[in-house]
Length: 453
Image (spheres, rainbow, N blue to C red):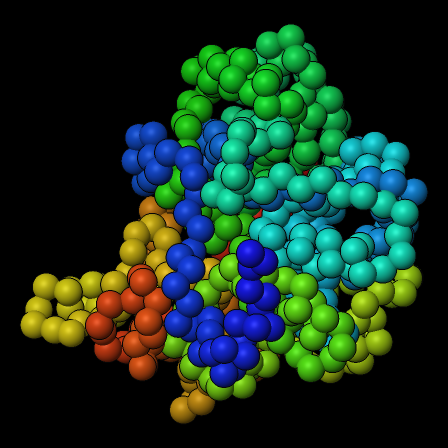
């Protein structure tokens, strides 16, 4: 029996906000071991030594091949593809016709006419839809994450080495000096007798490489990395610690996708997309207007990725937006006394505040808390969690320019009113959490140096 389309699910629920806020689809958890030691120690490793993070299971790969593979990506992506040769990668960003964000993923140029788009399914589905509804001489092979894969292991392993000693670990594992590799470019290594490809980048705002290769080689490569790391303080990081790495580097993992507009492309996409791909919406922002949850690339710091050197979906709208004020991506540092009081309410007669899970407090796939100042809403807080290295609860947010200066005081409205029917939502009352604006990325090294090393 065919699965229900997203369009049909919206029609059944009455509107997309009610459908998403009360969705019974739980947020995906990383299908890897939660902790190898404890998540506090594992967070510390990427600041002080080296953390090894297993990315093999929680991302989806969409392999795109054929003579028109690049043309498809150019038609959908806002990025420039000039000089995008083999062994390069980029953060691929897509928008709808009105210029609002669909999502982002990492695009690897593996071979001539062969690309791998890796990330959450939102933008991968959007690219797949355009391939199937357009005229492109290209094919795709999809390797779903281990949460959704019906059977068998992943096609490739992916290991992330992050931290000050990551280079030393990699050089010891390969037995050779590290080749000069620029940010977001790839190099080949030999580890345990196997060819390994490595992408130079950093998930936690620290120096690092993402290493990948055929799944069959993964265990031998992992053993060699662990052995090499013994002298350099390597710590394996589990799912709990890994889920917070983005808070330091300021990457928003699941921005709300702008797929609910009334244009013909969006309507056709909702008819094509299965309802189970939609995810859920959580947080204190509770507007009946779905567009209040939309973001532009400029709102989340992706303005630098936009290149008007080619035609793409949403170009005209982004050209207009580029001339208009936008929100600014910031880190919000939550007031520790207010957080402590909210957590403490669970130990007093209730109902208390919404449970703040540690270390990641998001309780829906797409999270949207209202950021308040001066009696009104000035932004959206999108992803929140605890940083053991700083002993702080923080969130990534986008706020009006007038409130984006570091040191500005705002308020995060925590919890839902009314309480939604999502499985992770218990009876609770909303709480105001004072917060202070800080830069994004929060870690000073990530803001300046690690891209240039």
